[in-house]
Amino acid sequence: MARFVQKKPLELTVETENPPSKDDHRTSAAAGWKLCTMFAIGFGLLCVLQAALNISLRLFLYDQTLQNEAVCKTVREPDELRNVSDQLFEEGWIYFRPSFYYVSSSQKSWQESREDCQRRAADLIIIDSQEEQNFSSRIQRYTWIGLTDRAKEGMWTWVDGTPLSNSYWHPGEPNNSDEGKEENCAEITTRRGRNGWNDLRCEKLHFWICEKKVAP
Image (cartoon, rainbow, N blue to C red; front, top):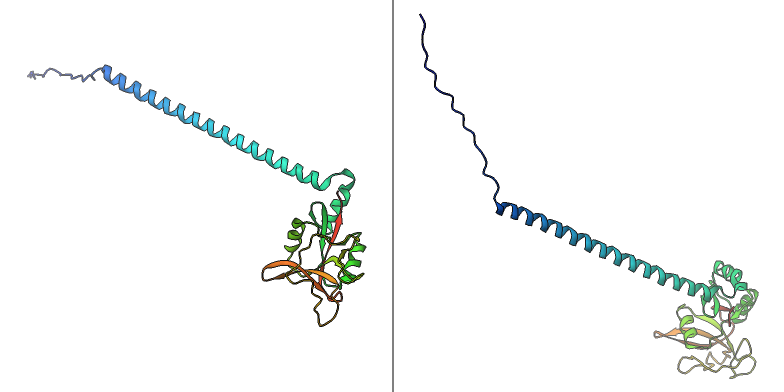
C-alpha cells in the first residue's frame, strides 16, 4: 500500500554582508597614508643620519691625515734624514723637536756618560729652553746633562762651548757643598716635586741623556 509523506519546503537562508560605507573607506585610506608618511619620515631621518656619519668620518680621516702628514714632515724632512730617523727610532731614541734624545739604562760618571754619547755621534743634552727642560724632567731620573765648570770654577758652560744663559737651578744651587769637594758637573734632579738642576761631583754614577740634533 502506498504511503504519502508530506515534505516540508527547503528553506535557504543567505546572509549578505553590508557593503562598506564611505567612512570605512576614508578610515582605511587615512591609516594607509599615515603609515606611508611615517615610513617616509623614518627613511628620511635614516638618510640624514647616514650623511652625518659619512661627513663626520670624512672630517676625522682628513684631520688624522693632516696630523700624520705634519708628524712626517717634522720628523722625516728633509729627505736625506729619512734613513737616519728610522735607524734612531729603532735604537730607542726619542724625538722632541728639533732633536733626538737617548736616555741611558745604566749609570756612569759624567765623563763616561759623555763618551758614550760621543760614540753614538751625539753629546750630553744641552737645555736651552723651558720646553726642553720640561721634556727632560719628565724622565724622572737623576741624569747628567752637558753642563760643567771644570774648565774654570764658577764659569758654567755647555759641552759645545757656549756659556750658560738660561738656567734652571734649584734654589741655592750651584753650591759646591759636597764636603769641600768640587762639584763641577750638573744633573737634573727632583726635590719636593720640583724639577731643577744640581751641581755634583763628576765622579758620581748617574743616568744620562744624549742629544742628537738633526734639524735646524
